[in-house]
Length: 40
Image (cartoon, rainbow, N blue to C red; front, side):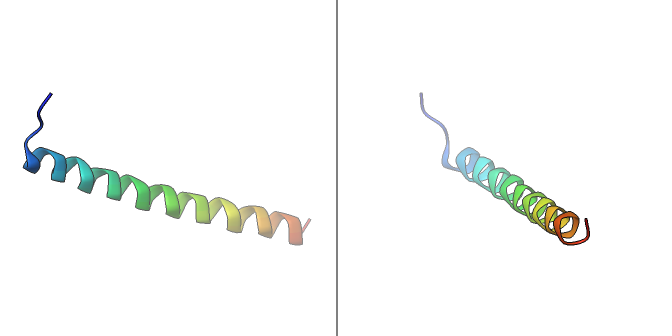
């Protein structure tokens, strides 16, 4: 199966965007849990 480079680049960019979203979400969860632990 052969995928054109442009298509692969597009997928790469989409994955990067997804990863940034996941990082932000993970950070948010970590901060939230720390907050809950400290102020319980």
